[in-house]
Length: 222
Image 1 (cartoon, rainbow, N blue to C red):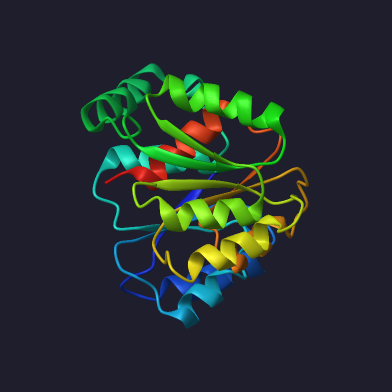
Image 2 (image 1 turned 120 degrees about the vertical axis):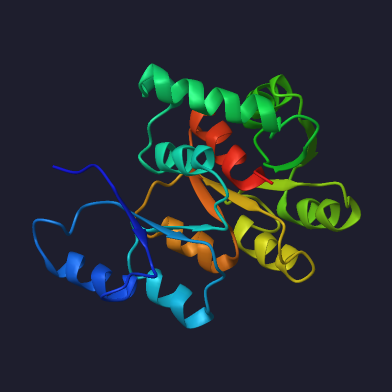
């Protein structure tokens, strides 16, 4: 039994896309989570094709075993404390060396002040600077005004302008700014809807702090 498959798209005997088709057609393998491992940018057609596999995740430009391990742990919804001690040490060395989160600026867009307080506390413990916006319109405004923002945490259900629309507006001027969508609805189609709106990734509420930190490390890894 396998918990996960890491797949390189550039196989010698067949393309990674062909293998994905075969895996999904095989009943015994169809539920295995797949991490698509690629060091190149995908075409729009390739990206669209991969969206059919809702369990797939794309890693662009992986430069170290530490990041691949981090991404794999995140994808499998396992926090670092659940990993063997040896692998925990690998992650710790990578995190300490890179200081991935320290001195980074995050824009937190959420209308629920309880969530804002809870998430801000977690982020500030990692020496991150937190900018707060209380709805989508304010979020778009701050994203465009503050060039120092490194990543956005975007709540989806908000008054005036929801998260989907806010993400689309931000994407008009910020093509490469990482955006993580936060939603209270853990519905099957939510992740795809967030990705289609322009988010890079997705977390369901209530947000697990360990999973959030792992995801931030993945997207802020330089």
